[in-house]
Amino acid sequence: EGSVDRRVLECWHTLCTLPRRLATDDSFSFAKAAKEVQVALEKWTAGGSEGVKEEGEADVNKWKAQALFVSLQQLVRMYQHQWARTPVDMCFKVLMDPKKRALFGKKLSAVEDLINILQKKKKGNEKHQHDSQGHYQGSGFQHGKMGW
Image 1: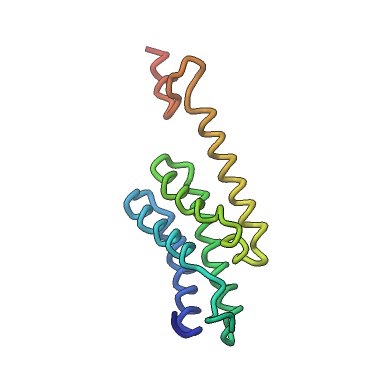
Image 2: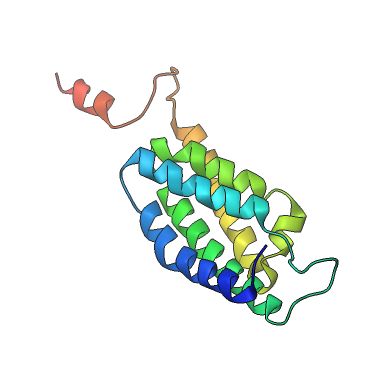
């Protein structure tokens, strides 16, 4: 997989660039950056070969957890946009595996809080999508149309 130094550098790169690329209104760029988060989550393991951890491996996992956590926070913020929901859902689907969540170590409860926030947002969106007659309640067009 590579040296510890190279993986620490990758973590720093992720921490410094990925959250900024997720904070965009370009749906294509957002989906591409979200896919990077998803792939990073899918590939992330406890590290070390054959159960023997290299020196510095614990630090790499801490940095990786921090870098991915900051990206997950940005993903939750972007969930307000309709075009961002599918990529966000795909990233958080990876976290349904308790083994993946456990990799976050001390940040585990914070990650679970993000999952709960996202689930509340999903339920809120489902509840407010249609009015009592089944009409879509989106951008407020229906409210503006009332005055015509």
